[in-house]
Image (cartoon, rainbow, N blue to C red; front, side):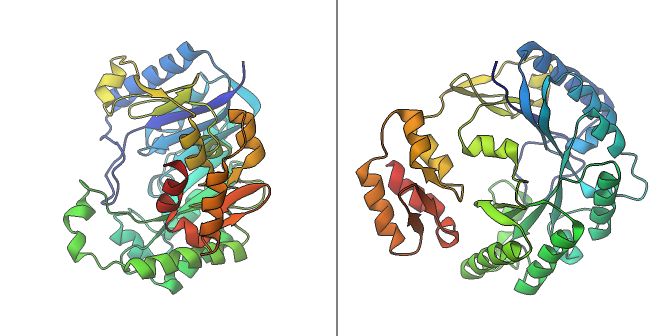
Length: 363
């Protein structure tokens, strides 16, 4: 059986950030215990082998190191399996934190993803983040002490009161922290979030300023040793997220937990956004076939390696159409796309309008 990826959604949060629209719920000991037991039951029933595991949320570290270890004891993994755990530094980096990095490291966690968002505490506060950069520093130090050196930090671009100088300082923080990977996301005001309700009063960079901040991030991260490999993801060589690359390369993965999505055995399916339903044994909802040509092209073009012609031919048994190449060459004249004999890829400037560009190729 070929190994696939495993995504485990832990929906629990102590408080929802004002920009977040991910599914989450307030935890209590009884619910967390029942949820962890159902996650273990679902994983065991699947009887698959995994070469990447990703704990996402919510706040996965909130369920405690013992529960993380319990879940991982049920996961049949390859020897080189990448196991990522998302951590909230205000919980795992707090002075009195009880989170045991050594235990999760012994259980198999070898990669940590933390929400820095900004190295400017005023910007963090504006984003509703608890704690400060000192918590991030302590959490990183504790992870490294436990032997987990593969650290990824999240940055946000276009946040309230952000400037080019404050962004540079955040990137400098990432470099000095010893992080191997940085995810840099442009703030998007989603409907139904607290930020959406007060959007007219938020002091945000305008569209042009936000674009400039994105391009600045691409440039400064590269100077700091983080090469861009996806629209929002940058890493030192060899430290790309193997799990997330499965999404963008249309490879298979199983999602376990409330609101978790899967692509396995040629089908896409998902669990409803309900912790109670998941705990009660609800089955995932079928979402149709996966891996179509349109989907493959859309996902491949998120990567800086782009749409590789040879790989496309292996998947679909035919060459990329002349029409797609002709459209790409037209966009190349505007500096939005690069076309070679090997591939079509989107430039950093093109990534700013990637949805429009990709729609040109899949209509």
